[in-house]
Amino acid sequence: MAAIISCYCYSSLAASKWINQRLPTKGSSFLRTQKSSSWWNGQFLPKCNSQKQVLCQLQNGQKGRSFSLKECVISIALAAGLVTGMPALDWSPNAYAATPALPDLSVLISGPPIKDPGALLRNALPINNKAIREVQKPLEDISESLKVAGVKALDSVERNVRQASRALKQGKTLIISGLAESKKDHGVELLDKLEVGMEELQQIVEDRNRDAVAPKQKELLQYVGDVEEDMVDGFPYEVPEEYRSMPLLKGRAAVDMKVKVKDNPNVEECVFHIVLDGYNAPVTAGNFVDLVQRHFYDGMEIQRADGFVVQTGDPEGPAEGFIDPSTEKTRTIPLEIMVDREKAPFYGATLEELGLYKAQTKLPFNAFGTMAMARDEFENNSASSQVFWLLKESELTPSNANILDGRYAVFGYVTENEDLLADLKVGDVIESIQVVSGLDNLVNPSYKIAG
Image (cartoon, rainbow, N blue to C red; front, side, top):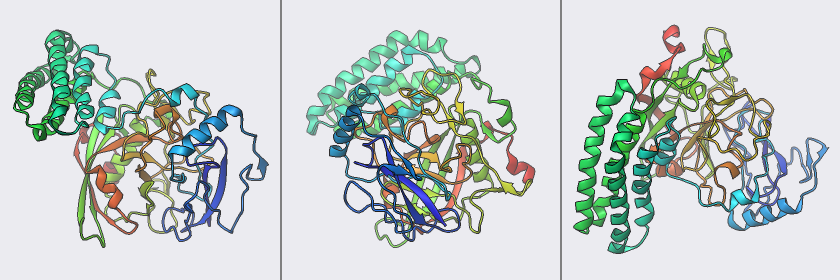
């Protein structure tokens, strides 16, 4: 069988028209063996497999539209900065990433995207408390300050710390008022720890101990994130009725994924800590947690590792996804995309199909180790068990200009040891994935029914 893979004509993220190439696969899932998956030939155009040659302006026999001047400008600009081809992130014989919406040029030059997974997760929480955000931002800016070499960076760090401390002191009453009543005591306790930590960080800066800054910053941002989570009072919206009986993650959970690495003297075993966001993807994250509790991924190999993504989830045998024992059919979930300023996710359609060309997703493909579901080419609601982690950072593509945003359902980020994803290879084995927190946020767990 063969799978359709799509990419841009001029560069991986540059042109608005796709070309297709076919790759041999195991059964119907091309991400299993990658026997002839040479999709990149070192140039801007990928080479097509001999099974079917497809011209740049043709797709499935239909003539594509010509490029506008605006598209060409964006194509050339992005091609100049990117040297990696764009593979599809799908899992069936008809799988490809559909033609992306062309972003407005002003979006492309609006500034660098946020790449830190912790910051993305904090920003994605369903809260509206300006006071805590004014504490969060200068603490996050410390990372940028530390890019300056030597102890000179500490001058900027000191300004960041003073700004955060001032914001905390001035806004503490507003922060406390924003805490959910049932979590207020815990939130106040965290704020006390945050205040003490700020003083400790200030002393670290005064002592000119640069090496101690980043660990303390991480600790303080963890407090901030926990305070922000304590502001969420219950689950903020109703999942559509047709999906309410599915496993749903109503909140957040974290898993540890242990991978046995083969043939690498430098890395033998990796443990990746992954935060799953059910606030913005309850169906997608719930499906994954349910599969984790079934030990579905334990013992499964990494099935794709090409420098752009790491992917797994294709079970042994002819099945293309998880077979639900109660129905003896593949369990699929809908495409689920949460957009900034919306109260609930969109289901069953890409943002392009909805005409939301400039909408920004709450969980963008910006961080190294962004986790998302793979799906069929022509079926938005066909994701089942195959997941992927993005490795290629989006240098020139802010969140709503990234061609993956709004087309694949992101539901989490690797927050610890994410850099080690680049060391994984096809054939490395997932020894186990275990839920380490947040399991009580899973409702309708089918694994309990199955026993």
